[in-house]
Image 1 (cartoon, rainbow, N blue to C red):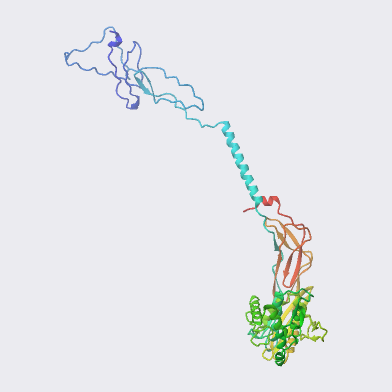
Image 2 (cartoon, rainbow, N blue to C red):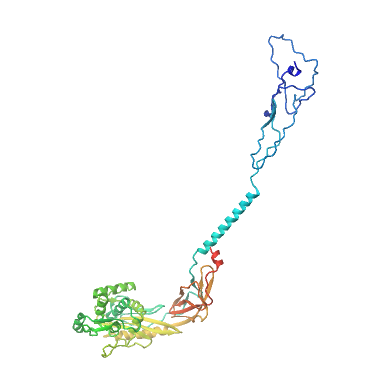
Length: 522
């Protein structure tokens, strides 16, 4: 039998208390003079099983031919080279698999080789390049989208801004006008407000002053150009048949006849200059088909003008149930004077018929004096003397319109109201004063394009405000400027009370720049 076969099996020693995973067992033949000592692996020989049939004191003697070596304190160990690491696989190949332990034959120990390297990130130059390209493209698309979006947005509408002070206060105390002791009266300056009033605001009969509303309503429905005669109207037999009754009541009349032909202008002159009641009713029929229908239109118009103390029951004012206040009649006359045909007709002294008949003087005997440019008289026993009037006054180059009403005067005719009105016109005109806010050519406003660019506007004439002591006048600017306009174009107006001053561009007005359009905020 070979020596190797006669060797007893060797068993490793006690388990290393420091690392339980390092215990291993092997059975093999140990060459002579080969040290199996390894300090970190204790080995012990296993105890051979006892033979119960052998004598108790008999022990197997060691072979005489094999000298006994002193065992190492750490027990027999085996020295063998570490395995060669496999070659590094390609980058795209699967990572190498490292064993948790190395073994040779029946020996197995934990792996003591180098720590397996971590798997590198799959970054290559080509991937980095693609990512950079994607970032650049994304940035380009984003910037292009922003540019297109900004340019596609509509450009804001330009606006006009005032650079002057927005108001001016005249020093001193308000003027005292020669108000009548009876009835009620109001004086107002167009664009400035009420200079004063007297007598309260209780509705009282209007008498023929109601014909101002009749003419106003008719002209709204049948506009008449300045100087135009207008269409020819035919008087109804019914109107002619009522003439005797109206004469008996003492009404003021033209004295129409059946089928008489009147132009629209002549009919309105008869209404407003000689206060013809018969023509008032014919105008109502020509417009609305009947008197009640026309009266309804009169009341609706009064409501639209804010005439809260007014109620109409007939188109002539002969009915004492037609009532109003001086303040309401001033509102109406102001609106009516804005119609050129109306302003022309009330500025007529006499009615001259088209058929060659004699002319007839109107009741406004102060027309043309102290700037009076129009008015309408009225009188009935129930109403007393009434008069509404309009006068123009030029102060420091500013044309102002003074509008007033005198009602309920205790006089046998309308003359008492007309005389009182003249005194008020003179006093009101004398109370007006002026203040220059800016000379001609001064930059008083600007156009804002809505994106940070402004274009100055200069005054085409001096900016002068009109008022009276104790009054504060608001100053503003109006206009609808275009996106583009050459230097000198008039595109806005400064309103300083009664003054309206055109504004012209101090330099060309251009569309917003490309940079401003791109950099504007949402």
